[in-house]
Image 1 (cartoon, one colour):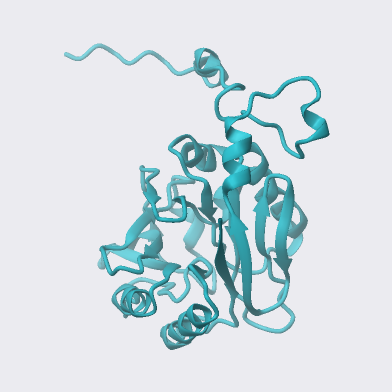
Image 2 (image 1 turned 60 degrees about the vertical axis):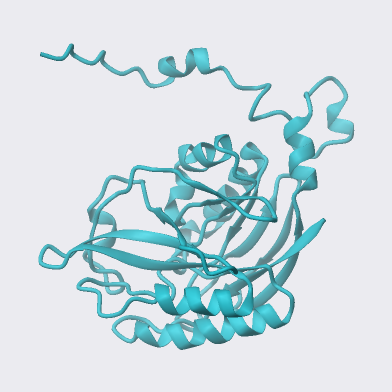
Length: 284
């Protein structure tokens, strides 16, 4: 059984005008739902805010739109911690079609705070999260991650080991010289975790090069560098088949990705040797 993902690569309002993204996002949700979308995916920090102190909160509005149009909506926001210190978690949020409390992923990598300070777009003191939640839906188990966490394979592996089959990994903006390696890594995270990985980004001008993709382990299902709203049919049966298989001689004749990577290939008895840690000192 397939379902539909609307991947939105918007022409975004840059800060300090980012609150204008909320009305645009609601329109995108309405249009995508009318086309039969089951999920709508927006970029990191879309609709915003991008800066602290936060001057608006898009979560109630987008959750209401998701419930009204009966669609899951993945979007970006800040979770303020201390306005005086300008600290915040960077969130990927998933609103549900039945109006229940939204799912939240607080970016975990890197430790920060440098990543969101000193630029012309983001300006807040980033505080890293420490959890890797996954979320059950009628279509499959969902994982949420963010942007340059694509360079840390531990993040998507943590989600896949917890059962995530569909991983949304929205990103920020034009990747410049990183574009080719970033594209490669999105597909790599799909291949190594036997999961569908979805990404998209903000565009601020016609000269920006986007990176909207839906990657499956055996093929890239969709990609575009242009602004737009794209509807992609996705199924998870093949993901589940590859995860359930045992790789053997001759598997390459039928499989375009290595099967059994989350079970057959694991060696947890060796993992402490990958990155040895000092023994914890005994408690006083």
